Length: 238
Ligand code: UDP
Image (cartoon, rainbow, N blue to C red; front, side):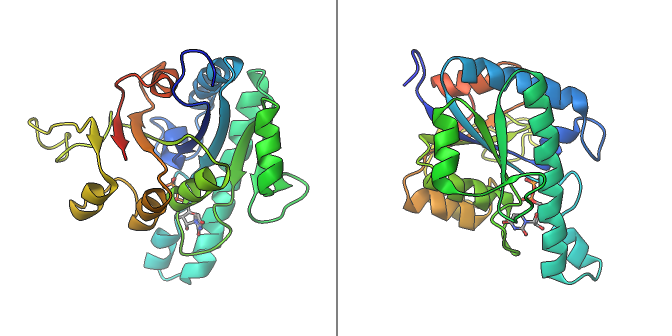
């Protein structure tokens, strides 16, 4: 465990929306650059980092099927969107001086390695950041579920889900000024109170495998490091 850190190996889940900044669509290079700097800080300290990136800034399967597309076909488009985000993120990391590898759950040799669990772990042990792209490779899943799955597979100490609010609230803080943030909450409470943190499949996977889940605000600078050090950032689901 790196000095002063609570978590030595982390699976960071970044939604596609986290990469688009204020643009409303696509990828904002400025957001990528600042993310890369924050990730470099913790990697330099010895933390092993893997990332699952979403694709909602480009395409979501559910939205496609709502407009008449075949759901599975739309989900494949969504998975390919995550690959674009992964490559953009890799570009930012490499420019920041972080060695990284993209591993895709759908084979595409020219742009990414194929997902191989032990190889991903080996990369991390060598200080490389691994970005998991193309979700699980299966339609009808989300990248949150992918993140929970990969966190378990690589034996992460924690899954960290980056959001725009600083944790889980008992009601929507954007609508209710009295909304209170949970410091800690159980998986079961998240499910039964329908707090809309992640889909139930993702929460259940964390619960069944005792994978701690930290929901935290990515937009506050320095929060990745603070969260990894165990500071009172966000909400811990246990
Ligand atoms: N997706 C999928 N299988 C997976 C992961 C993702 O089919 O295992 C598709 C799904 O269509 C989803 C899209 O990829 O809408 C983008 O992922 P997600 O919505 O989870 O991205 P985020 O909300 O994190 O940006």
